[in-house]
Length: 98
Image (cartoon, rainbow, N blue to C red):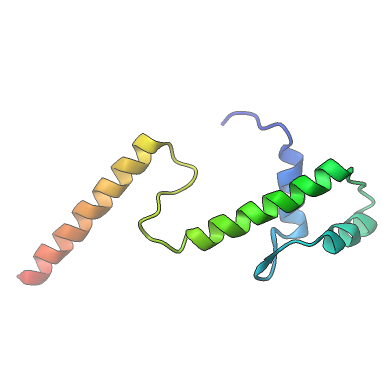
């Protein structure tokens, strides 16, 4: 895996909780987390955490579509997985006819 600059922000996001129920994390939650942990975020980091939370919520919503390729796979791998999934579905349909 490549190194990710700012990985600590992803770790912070999951420590805080990537969402607030059905909503992205709020700035008030970030403030409370900072007070509890003693970690001080600069404004750019706070904005980025909120954006990461929004992206997490967006992907969580879109992931309910079973035809959606997984977000971490490269296009070639995702295509192979989709083709195999379709072949499996077709095989099951043929078996059901027996």
